[in-house]
Image (cartoon, rainbow, N blue to C red; front, side, top):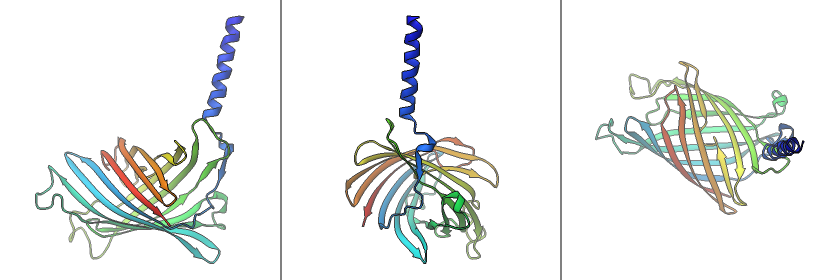
Length: 267
């Protein structure tokens, strides 16, 4: 009897510990409609291995700004970048030289009528055909932000999923005939099951925030990475971050691994 009593106590203690580690779904509040009014300027640097001894360096500037239109409240994000490819398979006259990369505009905000039951932020992204992209791409997106109402041992800060579908198409002035180096047209479902953890007062760990899961709907194939980023707030207006991403499933080609860092200014 004493043995069974000890086993029962161990099981009860393990169950209590598991409840401390995990936050029930019912203990998350949907805070998606709470949008910040801050303006944010970020500088990103990425170093990625594409496979087959080829690499890509990317420098990106990203800006966030609040938007208002009548009763509608939202935010706009603008990304612009330059890229440099180099490696064993690159021509020597093109290797290492920076050229225009993606320029993207993303807008999202509160939609309180048509999609009200979803409790989501509704938005869209447009990619402009600069550099060697050779295509326009547009896509709708839905995003949420759920914050825990109770604290746990894991110290979860938020669960912020985002779903986006990007559809690419040729522009008249940048077709395959004019620019044969452009990639296939985008037909991508992008999924970001982002979750954050508090490591200390000013330091956070975030998974699948910068790089998410991609499904190529045109020809099939998945790209699933492990993506982690540590952010640290130095001051009220200055945040530094470093991160990395490694593919674990790649039936749709993206990259093998990537390291990145950012400097974020809030004002």
